[in-house]
Amino acid sequence: MARGFFSTNSNYNNGSGVSNASTMDFRQYGEEIAHLKGQVARLNMITEGLWTILKNEGHTEEELIDILSELDTNKKTRKAAIESGEETPKRRECPNCHVPLQNTDSIIDRCIYCGHEIIGNPFDN
Ligand SMILES: [Zn+2]
Image (cartoon, rainbow, N blue to C red; front, side, top):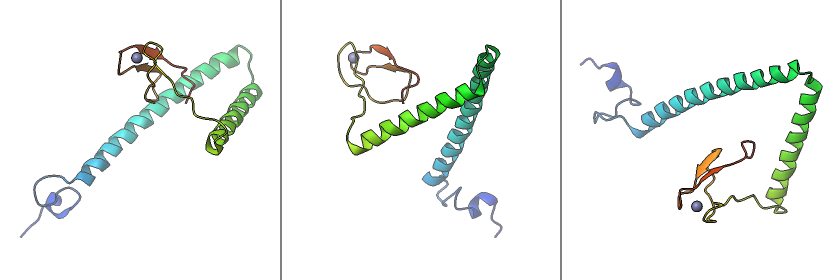
């Protein structure tokens, strides 16, 4: 008996006619990776545009390297302090109802309790 591609490939069909969960997971991960690649490319272009503006205004690559080094050092220092227990991670709270906000990594959050919209620091992570 001849078997088609889908019936011989267990990743696509387990014989029940329904795709198994891992196939769906891989497809979703692939879509998510493609989306993230697009976002990274877009952010690279924005960063390049901003850097071009700054260079045209006289800023140098040495300045950029110095500030990136400083930011990297600060981030590592803070991470080490949190890991050692010397510092606790910042918890944001709703300025309207004072309930702790969930960490969503969004710049704009909406309190799930009162609906108040909060715009955070885009460079906080
Ligand atoms: Zn609130």
